[in-house]
Length: 446
Image 1 (tube, helix red, strand yellow):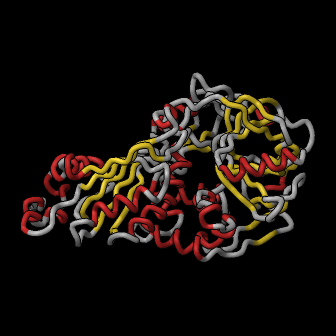
Image 2 (cartoon, one colour; image 1 turned 90 degrees about the horizontal axis):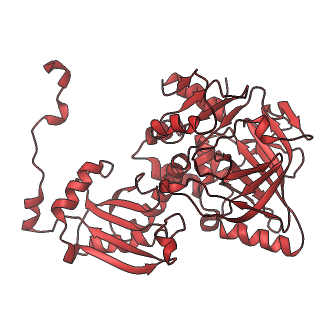
Image 3 (cartoon, rainbow, N blue to C red; image 1 turned 90 degrees about the vertical axis):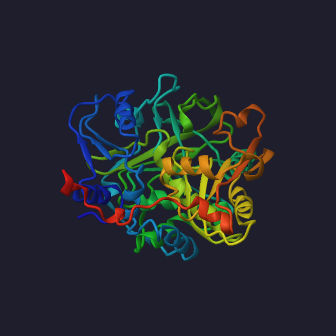
């Protein structure tokens, strides 16, 4: 029985009847992505037959909140506190001499496109892309490890482009290039829910080794092994690891690529990775994330920690939702226990300060289900008067993942106070209730 990484998750998904198996052959060009998109990237699907390959593929694993909670042995109510505790109290990892990832080691004649079913998702995508790879590097100066999900464009047999979105990593590469030095890197595929979630914690904000956050989240030491051609550690039970270097002063044109929010990202030169070695398990399962729901849900779960923390400094916060429809970064909904007239406006200040990516935030009372879009829309319709309840901030920082931001490289921000007034007027906004409705057993009527 598997304990860590992908195969352990597949066992649990099977036990809970959450895994679909596709036994019909699918083409990694367009077709695989189309099937995943049909299910809104919320349903884990194991593709047993991929055209042109003997390798299986898994996608849709990380798009459902409830599956995340189950895999991390937490609940919706406790999730934020569990994540905060892991960040505040990281635990050590365990280095092994050997592990399943070393069952196959390839150092010659590497051709990643022939080895693994790397998909092409959209008609204007510049190439096939590895979208689920968690990239690890070690800072040459501090010796600290950094991990993040990065998309990788296939340029050739052992040549990948890496999209660098992190200012810290960008600066590290620039400094190494000045010294004509290479940066060692590994790309990890075939991981689990805990490993992905830990990878989304901000290293610059918390300064914590994400491997050690993983150990704290999973309740046991993350088991690691050394790579074969670079000086890095990777999960012993992963499916596939690509090892290599980011050489100095070498880049390739990357993009376009169908990105977050359904638009194509820009075309630009980005650093490349020269793949020097591949480790993989027997009968490896290639991991796919249809862009970009899966990674961003896990990222949104961590952003909820930050949104909760910043708004709770101002007011009594009951729950937060960094919404899927807003790309798990642009839109936030905050439920508060309103005690003073200025609480909602203060919550807006706290929320918009939690991340430069947050563009619109709605503050509601605790009687609102903030995960029910129809209910939130009803609250916007009935508890908001624009002249006094909407706060606008012009020309703030935003993110390049928003096409409208890219027009002038600034983003306006909006905060909406959708809370009830205090005092006698509050009663006008009480919801109509049916006594006993929550206990009704509808099956006995039909």
